[in-house]
Length: 106
Image (tube, rainbow, N blue to C red; front, side, top):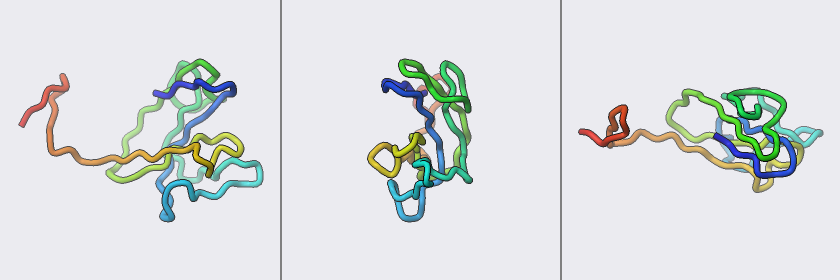
């Protein structure tokens, strides 16, 4: 889930992490990144998935299945990337199993 506490509508796009590392993704002439390998996005207010942007003061979310690895969370608004407005998500395998209630098991 993403909460937009900014003044403009925003979208968050999940992409494979570039081989050069975080913050190295090139931008197009319009200041946005190319999204050919878009794995999912959050850009609808009060709803899951893609839309016209998460409105200020609103939330959006997305559900996706990811393989183990590192991913680039891009706040894909003009000129927001590759500045410091991005994040990295790491999907790892846990050695502790949890049951459907979130209780640790063996």
